[in-house]
Amino acid sequence: MVRIRTPFNLDTYLSKAEKGKTILSFPKKQILFSQGDTTDAVFYIQVGKVKVTVVSEHGKEAVVAILERGAFVGESCLVGQTVRTATATTLEDSQIVRIDKTVMLRLLQEQPRFAEAFMSYLLLHSIRVQEDLVDQLFNSSEKRLARALLLLAHFGKESKPETVITKISQETLADMVGTTRSRVSFFMNKFRKLGFIDYKGGSRRNGGLHVHSSLLNVVLHD
Image (cartoon, rainbow, N blue to C red; front, side):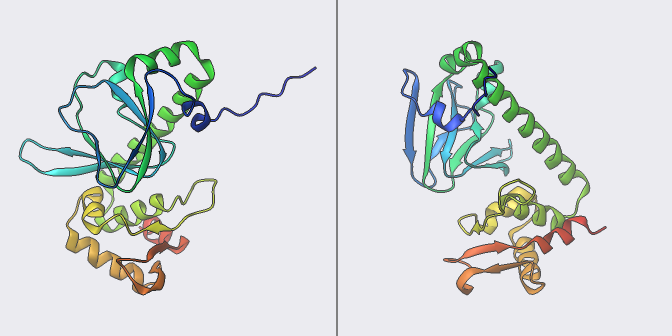
């Protein structure tokens, strides 16, 4: 008799009660950890979005990642990093699983299917980081903004593309892309006039930002 292997669900697995593993609710703009803090836990996003930022010695802040449901935050502590090199802040109301470092290491050793799912996540995340680096090195700020919007809308994933909610400000987009807010505003207006994006209900502040597949033309255009 052939045994069918059921899919492993990280959400379900990490929701199980266990010492050293806590499910927490955070409001918007809540700091999970700050740059310079001691590393003592890994965080898993069940609901919401988390912004990861780094501040230079001269006080300049850069957004290095916007992480969503299914992502881990602070996993570098598992490879010997003792101090946080970035700050993680919620962008919206979020539900986060906090896993003590010692518990996370034990799960990776004792639970093969969890370890397999975690390694798959790390590999995909590594590919995304490499793509982000290439984007920063070779593409214009207009292309980088278009790519950021497409990624936030989940274009290129198997699931159906979603609406980008306007809880991500133009300041945050500017930090992600590595340009100024005025340039982001200029390109956003350009994209809207060309029909690549539109604002639900006509309100930039309260409505949803819809990203259309035609925005790929900006990224693919030489």
